[in-house]
Image 1 (cartoon, rainbow, N blue to C red):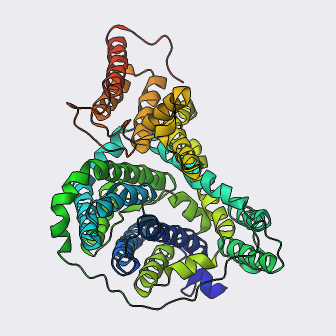
Image 2 (cartoon, one colour; image 1 turned 180 degrees about the vertical axis):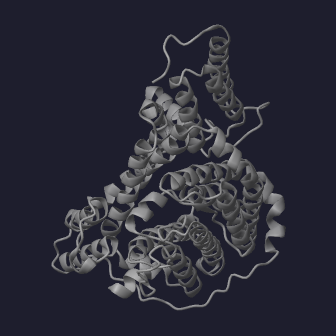
Length: 527
């Protein structure tokens, strides 16, 4: 275990020498790798199972190209971590995790690729349109990266950390928690090991990494119980034999053919790209709080370049920095886990082993790692935010709750063979309001948290600026889009009258705060 712990021979005279690999990188690798693999398999399942796109095109072009973004991005983030460690003389620098963005995966599948294929019946053209959309999103993110440092300096920490804490608890932790109840013995056994080792920092026998131990024990229990017929869902499905194939996602100009049609999908795609830029600013602040102060522009620029290159190589999924740096740091990860993830995801995509590897591990055994990450990030938001801003952090949870409700409600309707068009009365009104509140949730959460933090500090004038920005973004659908897809629209031709009412409401509140800043004075100084 000493070799794993240090990778290099320990030097008592140079304890702060930067190290690429430690035992903790094993824990962190499983968390980041499994998250990325799941995203690739989900996209493949939707495109081939729901829309009937050719499996060969999806597996040989779309997924390997998307994996290139992960490969490049995680290697560059590893290099940034190594550079920071060398510059600061520290041995505990953790690389920023990068992976495939889950919300835009569904957005691309159901809002771009699926509709384009159904409209044209041309799989090759659909692939070109998907490539072009990702390339355009990458160009947008590269340009936006130069504004990231200014955003980070101007937005209160309650807004930056509150928005990602909400996503961490409600989407990263809650949804995987549901998987535990499909196989409770497997799920809670794995959860207990992950929690006692990673949350409570209890040392396992032989110094085993907690994430690896949780997955191995949970997986063994799953197959043993399955063989005995004791799983709630019966025996596990037999594993398909892995099929080896070699797919080389080389850069090309194929995307140029898809640009004319891709321009029509930009109102849907740009909000997803903007959300990852905002998320990148958030996670950079989160990493700084954890002790690793990266340059915001560098983090966002890598994200944009990785997305751009992925699109040029045939990818149809955007890359983004993941929420979870502090959790990976607590696991003991350094730069090794991102290097290992980059190489593993790249190799799995180009050899076609993805489906087999994901099918091998039961969801109930893997979910506890994501639950730990969600809880750790949520805790950090409160620990790193001053107590007087706790209410602002809480406010930022509300749009994410709406997003979660929309996801669950939509799945329920789909299971019943219904859609939102079948709803009436109060239930329809609730659905519409929830959809509007949830669309653009990451941007909404950030702006609400920032505005309310200034309110709590008795700075209504600064709060008014954020509220006025909310009004502008509402008018074009970046937040609170009434469209089910969450797409943007022209403020001159809004899809529903509610858009103007929402924009006017924000403007009225901003004007009120501005007047208070001019003529009023705080009755008491903030604590």
